[in-house]
Image (cartoon, rainbow, N blue to C red; front, side):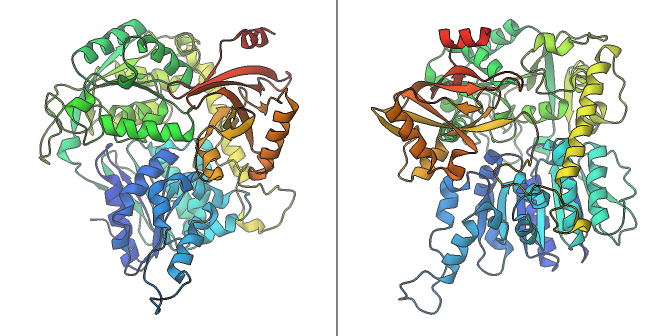
Length: 637
């Protein structure tokens, strides 16, 4: 049992995927609140999809954390589009002393005000949202102090903390430092957290609490609870037992031929199994989809990536949960194939009989493997409800498609095999170390978890000479990203003086780095009338549901309409959008509500002029570049 002192405290909970870390964190947060150290909590997650899923889980239990009626608020960029959240801010609570009053009660007004904007959502007693909403509290973002105020006397829970890249990690360290300085507490959750990352996070909290550094981390056990608070003589480490039903041994088959993967998928589908192939890029997912689109009926083949409109992504999530979720039946599951990118890695409680993954860093593979035979089932795929039941589908085997294994790889070892994915995971040394670990042919969880993570992300691993140049570049980029985070975060000692620093609007505040991207709003012409791609009674929701994110090198600017009447309609619409369309690109398509084509200007390199590219969108493939004569001509110039 974790001790709860009456002072700022931080706890790191490490356990395997699906072991119940979230439930443990909620119970721990309740104990911290009951001790008088906090008045509420906020749970931050890596993506909107994970935040939406968490909101649904917390909504049914959060009220037990409070003695009085409390608001629960969902905070992320598209929070207004989640139906459960919309229902939570409808009139609720008792009327104040006048059951016949015509006006809203104070409870109703309070709930609506808290939910009105993300920056105010953190002020609610209970909140769920993306980690970005927390990171904005210490970036040079307008009204960031309101976010810090919202976190005051809250238990800050960060799930999947390992998903932070070097930039996000440095910003999160600043959040923890500020939070500890005002007496806040934090709970961090992960299935794949390296010791160096743990130490950095603990040190940041200790600095805020005035201790300088958290000393005494030694344990290599897993699962593990790590705690620190100012009065503790050292870091407290407690090894724990995980649930028996999530302890398992996975076989690993490392292959280098795409044809072998395709053949294994076909055999699994013919055997009545459900399959997921997780790819590292949208382009690779589209290529894999092309292999099967003429072999499977549309209802048995699902393509899932980030280049779908928000409405279609939400619909696809629901389809996947229906066909492969915890309550799915053998009829739902049999003979269905999902081809996905990283969007299926953490956001969905899906369970497939057979999983293939492109080679990715070991922490990502562990997450992906967590979707393989996730819930105990009978041989025919029927869910077993006995809490002590073990899966009966045979030995789980994760297939990994990677470059041909070599003890002495060339500099282009990964790029030659996966040219499009080479930039997604820039440190090819980590990929090689992951591939090396997979050569043993099995993973035992939780016994192997710590050694696998430290073997790839630990200090000074041995790397082949051929990859040293790539690794040096990747590490240099990580240091650069950390430096940018240092520049972008507020300094308490400086106070609120401009000092030549630009305070961004929230639309442009960089809570994450990476390839520059744009929000693209899809519209369509219905005759000469411009409409959102997705119909909705509220125009703001219609345009939000019609949005997606695309790399700026692909879509950077709107292509003007050649027809003056249509161009005037577009200009009039832009005046109604947030920032008058300054932070998004409008891509107007010609077609019906299922498919259409349109043009936009790309920005491949700063020194090159924009190029006019043609794009296609449909509900099955998402947004893809059209193989038109125009596109090919522009690509050749």
